[in-house]
Length: 399
Image (cartoon, rainbow, N blue to C red):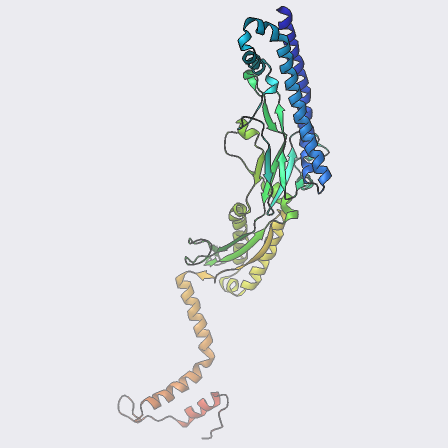
């Protein structure tokens, strides 16, 4: 009996040692090989699948070796003592002490294949968990690293490996992903930020409130379209990162999340993007007097567009279009003053004509030639001469 116990201990120690060496190698190799799935080559894809299968097969062989060794050691005494329960006891022993043949993927009961389809409007990045990710670990977080590890649109299989000692006292180690797949959604974005309730992206007032040098309120509505181009997806991801999975950071199901999603372009533009546009617009208006801000609207828009394109390009976002989506809006009293000033200015040069026409209208309207007191109305020759001179094609009238 002592020999059997000793043999069992030897088998388990050997199995533990083999797994402790095998698992890190499997993690390193499968993590590095997974990125090859996106190479435009059938042969490379087949080689990658063979690597996955080889390591899965090797893990199975180690587990079976441990199980068969335990069966060989304990088969005879178990058969002798309880001949009718040989098969059941062997299975129980194998599952209890031969922990290497049983593993659980997080949120799964077995190591199932995990695949993700990268859609045409998405860019994907595969980052192995361990090893020389890109020349050195120092470069791991660089924009260039992300760009170099970008994958094309197709099905991507995420490899799993056993994580040594993750089973704790229960003795069953878990399967975990050997890398992480990061998805960047490049769906185009557009908004119409206006104050009107009957149009625009929202029924709430989304116009930009600004002030002139004098402190007069000027609200501006803007329309904008933006997108993340394929070649800029790494820059966008590096600048804005991913949306953290919900849950405690020390939860194994959070720690070993297989697929991460980059910040959504709409979320970025509704937050950072909108604030940036408001800053640019109000900087232009705030540096001018009220009248100048009103008259320089074209220049202001061109400056805003130029600065917006420059900034957003630096963070991986392409501005497709940017322009005014509404009229400038002022406080009611200011708007009335602007309207009155425009009317007065526009009518200034026409007042002599209007006065002369008014006198003719009075004469025409009083057909009897009497004023309100019953006296005859006479239009002087000087008035007629003035009227004729103001008319474009008036003939000369002498006194």
